[in-house]
Image (cartoon, rainbow, N blue to C red; front, top):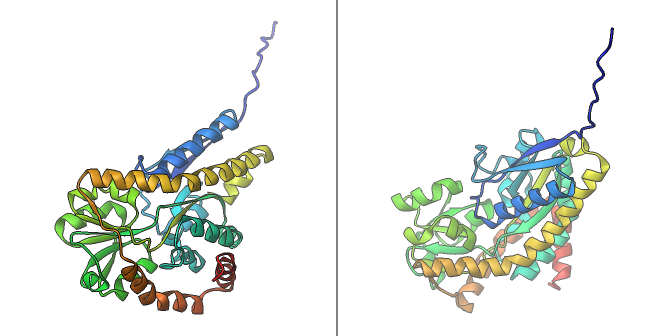
Length: 319
């Protein structure tokens, strides 16, 4: 009797992760996540493949994403830092209104908070791979705003608690709506204004339902891309190191691009009919004064790590 001999070719165990993004495919955060996924696949010779599901395709709206990643419902997700602050108050720090004056200060704030954010993420069973910024948030309206008095009565969509407090402080009514509901809410008159940055203005085709953009730089929001720690720890050390290194590189690239993206997206809005209304120094000072109590109240009740991060940032900017 002759036994057949079979030769088994060696094979590499491949890991495939779904990655979640609530932003449209052409948003710079979704594009960044796609670039990151492509670099990971190349660097690991296809052993780790990250499949990006953008536009909220997986059904998650945003505020629940810390829990979603913690529970392993998706191994990796992009999430708005302040958008998940309902579960972790520390994350509200980055969008305290008028805390940072420009992108450089936003970067200094990110550097100050990062060790504390890493600690908080670990508590939630996840690891931050990179943090990337949005352009500064402005106010998009149907009527021109030149003073605080002009803001009274606005019905404004906000994306976090701090934005809502700004709207209330200026005599308006905040609406916490997921991005997917913004356009229809503007079209039906449920809201008449939005606090957000220029990429979202393009994503939402605001020129079809709004007329003015006021670059107030209310906040400079950030997104973090987090991986479930259990999923991360199942990877071999070499792959883990690749993820961490590529995360650092992606973070540096995203911060470098943000000012350019802001101008590009604003130009698209202008071309389609949105008028940019540069704010006066008087308006900016008035808004900073009105929102001072928001920053003070938050700091008073903030957790110890948040106070420490805040102090480190203020030292960096000599305030």
